Length: 578
Image (spheres, rainbow, N blue to C red):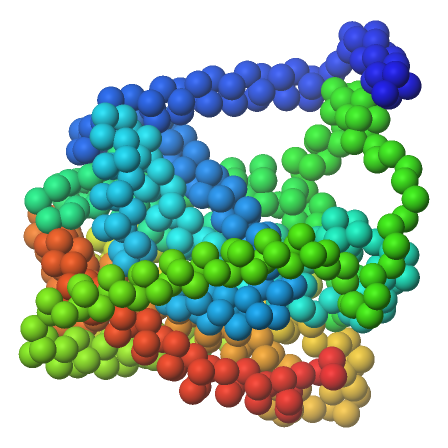
């Protein structure tokens, strides 16, 4: 202990001695740190302020920086919760075979429930828990954004843990790693790249429902928080086109800054965990990360922090007998206890659901079934339309290093933009063209879901081995022959993954595309999404529960009957790495 303290003290003295040589980058970092502290103090005052169920939204452009900061803080807080949930839930599902049989199907159901399905219970419970402060309403908004982020990340982490190469697992067992050493040195590094990319997609998914999360109505109660989503919602309701353009500009600026200052450096950092190279390998760079690497302040802080974090040398623990990984009795008992609590919560939730559904008239079930069929047809139409242009565009980007370097960052930023903020303009154009919301909702779904297919096609095209492309060139394949015999089989597994995520996104988008408020009036078309929105707005909880139950059943049944079979087909016949 004395030695560690002496080391730390020496590093601190050296830091003070060398701090006189700090450069412009360090001064910028100090200014940014001061701004972050000021922002945190402002957020704390906002959260602990007196409860205002319907905050007045100022539509002047001067209010946008504050609203943008508030929305950004909710998105980042939701991401922190999502990351913690992902690590705990994904690790539990991957390491406990008994719990896995419940946790993974439950995750499949949870991701099929749209944000409005969680909203009534969350808002009413948290506002009742904090009746005089904004904390409850803020927590409800954060948790609703969380429901748009967490599931994709959790699936990614779970599948990464289940697909760790056998030689890595055997090496961890050979070196007698404890569960913590195995997690820190093998499992987390292996899962990092997939988790980073899925974090970017999940963050975009959270922005998709920003307007709903910050401005929502339950019956005659209007809950509204100051933020970019509520600003856009108020501007759309008032038909203020200038304010809508200001909001779109602020959202675009926030996404670009977030991409350049957070995601791009993290993506570049995560490349050091790449296990192997395949297909084309473009070196990724981040000007912000390179700027940070020139900082003397961070360099000086790194040494004492490493001295504190350096683990003490201990003898390796005894190797576990006959197990792929260490599993103590305490861990087994904890897992069994958590599993029992989970089952009890699920049974209690199912019982309450049955009581709620008994209050719904039997005649209403037929209308819900017809609405589910109409929404399913729109989801399939949006997925098909998205496939038509994303496959050639994704192949062009993925097969060309020059196009990939130029267009991929642009596509990432565009895809992160929440499509509902464009809905008022799209609805105005559709109305002017004489297109009703029945067909127009397909276009609105397409605005938000096409990017999932494009990203996956780009990834699939980039992974096509270079030797196969060279062979096709030597044998003088025509463009059609290359597409039919190499490119399409090569991207098909990725295309199926894109279809699955795009269809899931379209089901969620049906909530805001089949029921749209614009210019002070509401437009609706027959569909399950419109029924969910109307039931939530009118606080008809039995109808809301029945609509969500039918939506979850349709999504899960379609996943198992169609998407899973296509996924299996792609792995058996078209995987180039097998």
